Image: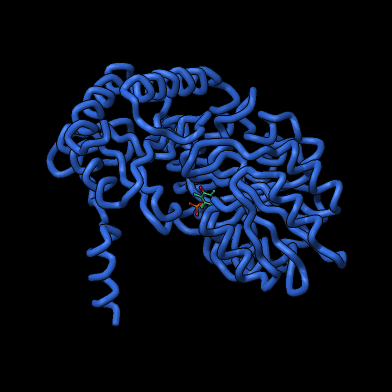
Amino acid sequence: MFRSRLKQLADRSLMRRLSPLESGTGPTIQYAGCEVILLSSNDYLGLATHPEVVRAATHATEQYGAGSGASRLVSGTLPPHTHLETALASFKGTEAALLFGAGYLANIGVIPNLIGQGGLILADRLCHASLIDGCRLSRADFRVFRHRDCAHLESLLRRQRTKRPTLIITEGLFSMDGDLAPLSDLASLAERYEATLYVDDAHGTGIMGPTGRGTIEHVGLEQRIPFHMGTLSKALGSHGAYIVGANDLIQYLVNVTRPFIFTTALPPAIAAAASAAIAVIQREPERRMRLWSNRQRLFNGMQRLGFRMTQTVSPILPILVGDAATASALAERLLSYGIYASAIRPPTVPDGTSRIRFTVTSEHTTEQIDEALHALNLAGRETGLL
Ligand SMILES: *Cc1c(COP(=O)(O)O)cnc(C)c1O
């Protein structure tokens, strides 16, 4: 019964609760009657509230309506969808792009159409739940390799005696650890073993790479990784997801992907907002500069205080706590000092690796970052972590 399962979750400090805010998102939010500094959002460049992005959404709603009416294969593709797909393909340097209602939908829809029964999937152990669910839906054999461990991956590839379709799955920038996949080695292994490489760049898109095109640009592999997936819901400040790649891949996905075919198209406002966000990313590189300097300030401060952290190289700055109860306690203490940063516990992360996952944005001020470090010093001592 669900009540006993709920009680089990509470007993193990794994209960999740919704936190109703009294404001929109931003570097600070209103919560429980107070203004607090938000260090948990994936809106890395503050684009969710950028005036140009908001104006694009408002304008598209006025011009095209609040909803899109039906699946695009039923009632047609609206101009904001066409415009966004063209903008994405051009931003990413691919022939084509296809939009999805969410990253979750893209992953569970696309993976089972790239591989099926009789095939083999090898996925990084820390892949996002939507990737794992896509693997399960595919009915292919599914194994995980140790996080970022290409030697382990190769041993799994070499173990195959008969040749069969193989898909290697990784995130570009890992969402819960903030470290990067070894994309160059993964691409080489995929080439050597004739496997397909599927990269989910939900967190890299907009922030990584010299022009913000993402993790694949960051490592200079755009020629060797012909397609990938990403989301519009993190640095792009909007909602939804995409696959970018060759025309024939996109044509195929339009025909077979159930979470594309059997779901209503993104609202016009959402698509227009994402297009505006891509334009801002290209025109305002100073946002990325501010993001990286804020990231460095918070990271240096956390290191100085002596917290245990992951191998992060990004604005995702997890403080490793271990058990779920202490992680929850630390999050509560931080909130009492005006810092909102949520505890991430199993099953989002493996057992024993509960953490507070801080994310910093380009819009935080240095004063806010210093205030967070001050709170971390106090809360870290109160919870016995420092
Ligand atoms: C957030 C995320 C998703 C899901 O994207 P949504 O658009 O929020 O559904 C998929 N993959 C990764 C790696 C993510 O971080």
